[in-house]
Length: 90
Image 1 (cartoon, rainbow, N blue to C red):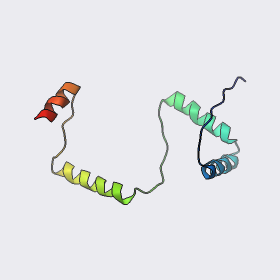
Image 2: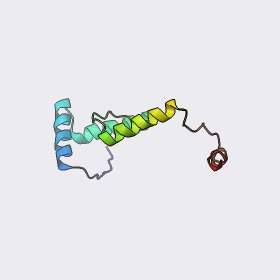
Image 3: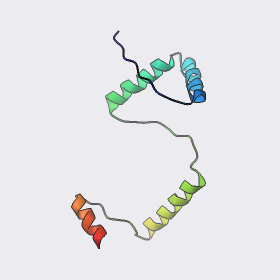
Image 4: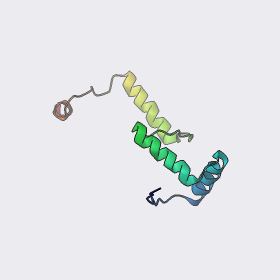
């Protein structure tokens, strides 16, 4: 099998935990990454779950955005960049 090398930088703890999970799945970390890359090429989608909870700043920004949407303070959808420029210039 012809192979190529991909070098990435990651945190040591993330690498260790990923290797442990891959081992539990019965594959190497390299095999797990290859499976993900094959899925990426096949589906042309980047999909993953983030289990992190948004921080307070992001939660406040989301709350403000929802309030502005309720008040109708949103831009319309544009079909061209020129339409957007015209809307912004008013």
